[in-house]
Length: 422
Image 1 (cartoon, rainbow, N blue to C red):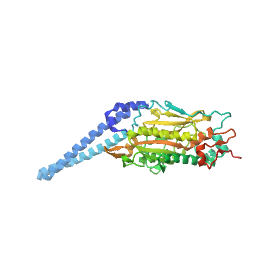
Image 2: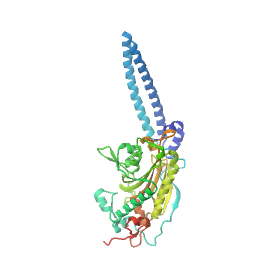
Image 3: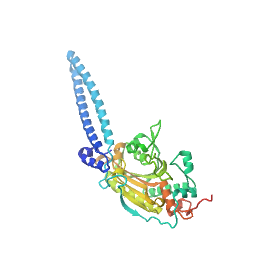
């Protein structure tokens, strides 16, 4: 959640941030009103508690009829205290709910607007030009025996798939390349759980505007994560970290699950938009002051990975209205997909400043006391879309696919993936 002091001291800035996202200022006004009601309720409760304590002292000293009269008053004050405490609790809940409804304040440099209002920061590489009609990843996957969509649908339904043969090899190669790069950059490697408690999901902001895209396990207080950002953000929940230990950098592998709510009719074929995929995610804890430079470092690591694969891509500055609840700024790297004739998102990195750590109570102890940490996340490799980009960009006229040099040591030295004979 946002810093309550910012809301109280500069509500116009928060209103302006809402407008930048294309959102109403109503949640800001609601939160301010809830804060005032909460403060009033606290004051009323404390006044009555003080009165109750004072009367208790008087009762101890009184005798006879005076004591009986005071006991009657004490009984009434006790009832008033109980009612005031209930009002205070209700006001606290209303205040917390109102505060949680406000997204992180978008960075001043983030573009205003919605999904289509991004700003292109740079292009890297040149999209390949073919002297033959390129095949899409669906046909290439079938020819190579790498992707089985039909059996995926038969077994699990639409937007599911099997990676088989060289397809499975490609996934494992990508995961190992990504994990090796992360380890060499100083990240601690993690295999993260894909089931989390509600606190983890809510603490990262995924039970807000993204709730419709989340799978919940019926009958259990567990959710399937759409990214390992969720378990990694909750990894240090309710902890006070030593400021000298920062930054803490983790590279986590996990399966990810998304309902893809609202995507009806979009990318219905292939493995661009699916309900399950595997991913290597970078996650960092640092100070708010250092988070902005760390955000650039995460973007640089993502670019390094795409450069190793030799893919043409562009970097965009995502508009405020497309940031998600927790991020104050986000950069996406989008690779060129030949048969679609456009760039598609492969990786993204977000700076969530101290928004998630306030919800999850993650702090650092330094020379100026305890403060909330900043959390950042960055996708190093989302497997299916990366496989799509490799197959389509490295294909040959006969349906074979040249293996990017960086992946060959992880593919048993294979240089070319050849179509099956059947």
